[in-house]
Length: 434
Ligand SMILES: Cc1cc2nc3c(=O)[nH]c(=O)nc-3n(C[C@H](O)[C@H](O)[C@H](O)COP(=O)(O)OP(=O)(O)OC[C@H]3O[C@@H](n4cnc5c(N)ncnc54)[C@H](O)[C@@H]3O)c2cc1C
Image (cartoon, rainbow, N blue to C red; front, side, top):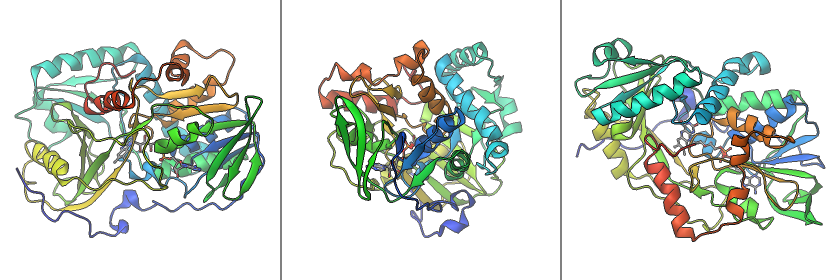
């Protein structure tokens, strides 16, 4: 196996522009009595706050235990892909792209959205067939995609060898963004519409009276509230347990690396997805960012002990395999050193679908979790669905994402965790993802 040299990290963040703003947002307002309280200030919590405020909801606050966008969101690669196996997922991703394209205009804060386009590369004839099905879904909802033969691929990415590639889907409206900038942009929009934000504010209990949420206990005191929206990422299950609701939100380990500078790589290159070797790749300035979905995923147990910061150990064996597979397509990177590894626990659900909407009981408790590793790219679409779930007549699709689907049928934890891991392992080929 090719060994990746210089693994790991002797790099200060300011060498990598995309990560410059990490941990930068500190907002120190106090928790207060509010009609609506959003728990969690990651990409989902901030998108939900912005969407609700834009829809005319008032008296909203975000409570964040740490700093804004400092947890799972801070680790994300920022890829935004719209080519998905179902119409609903494609439409959700398209809603996000539409939003990213106008966020700067709407909020005055740039989400650092780069619409570079993306290439999904096939290395096998069976994958070619799957690509045809994906392109059909895209066409059915008006997403522009184009098939490229292997000879045209080099026009888009001269940096890769095309010998192994059998076909490719080009999606010109895909791209990538800087997750923390995106969150700052949502926040600016939300704040301008009156949303308040308290950081270093941990929710420790949720008070329910007559089967209705009435208040929250925090490390900064008690506040009354009548609607709680749980956007706590890998901690979402713990928060739901505070009201006695046991949901299968499974944190699954995920990681990627950023290399040292590689000749010819630059930020305008398209994002690459290579399902046959389970990899995604993009330029990070003049370096390569590469991550993947290893075949044997590792998850935390559903009843894992809660700690405020969850970061897995780096798994060099997995990263070396990513590098080996990448080196088959990108010449001259055998000896490239690594600059950085980013990692965390995005959550997966046993059916590979988001958990969005009110729980059956108690009243006033709503979920926006189980992001299945696209809670940055999907944040705007998820927030839109969340808003719809609070209306009197949500669509059948939004209703199908309800947490209530898990509330009445609890199977054994091992089985649920295994099902969630299998969605991770089959991330690029799972036709069940909806
Ligand atoms: C290595 C890696 C790469 C990824 N790449 C991508 C990508 O390219 N594209 C993409 O779309 N997604 C990607 N993801 C997934 C994406 O990061 C997540 O889906 C997304 O960030 C989830 O956002 P969140 O707001 O739900 O969670 P988080 O960002 O974790 O936010 C939850 C917040 O809740 C807070 N919280 C928890 N408990 C409490 C409490 N009791 N009181 C108050 N606050 C609390 C936490 O402090 C935290 O800030 C990646 C993830 C990883 C780990």
